[in-house]
Length: 363
Image: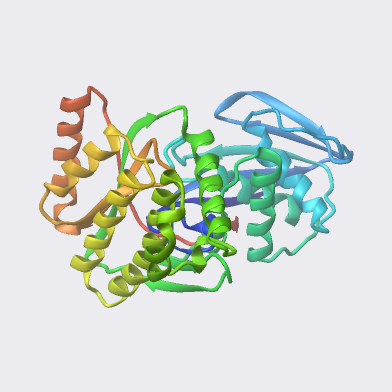
């Protein structure tokens, strides 16, 4: 008998490149999902197929020497291995995968794939895995098997998402606060439809820069550096590390303040923090690009927009915009037309709501 499991993508309202520095992030799970239909099989093999890719792949659960293939299948295989390493032995299964999470847009299609596969494999093997354990297993898969040294934000919000709410997550303690999103605004995501090739390698490079800065400043991570400490000792850092640290230290503080502003209903102040975040990501962390900057500029010129910034790892992908509900249709029409006129590219513009995290689909 088959069962189906679903996990959402996410958008990060503010708090970019802070999760792997043990700081704060403020994401929301959004209504794009990866769904896995799982059917048991009698052998110790997992077979993968997806409606989005022509290739299928099978792997034995007992292969301790498995290596990444640099394919979409790595995310599912990595999760299976991480589940086994974490004390969740699996049985063989066929997995059929479908997804409407935009690929390569910075909306965490990879985490949605990992979490949905992990939940399906665990449940089909008789394990009641906690949401936190599932997030940790999926992070291990991405860090150790796929080789992307991301933090836990994407996997955490895909498992812990809450309807009509964002999550202020402390990526060190994993304590979190659910903050309701005002009913008067919409989350509007603008997809530039570009993804520059250096994104993956540059992401890992920036993490190394941050770790080097923390070591030189004698702390565990940049989370431990206050603004006063940075002002006193930053001159001793190499120029590039100084820039990266400046963004991270400022962004951690901005994220806490922004979440408080949103909780208090101060959309103007929240939007100001969004703008500051984008400027820092462009100037200090150097992960924006011409298309993202243009999309933010176009959005900020529209009525009813409280804030706009790039979201995700950068070098393309999406912006997140906080827009008053009555202006959403005008925003979509005018931003899409202006972006197409400037670039020749038709953007994707999605009006999203925050949704619950991973779950089994029951009928």
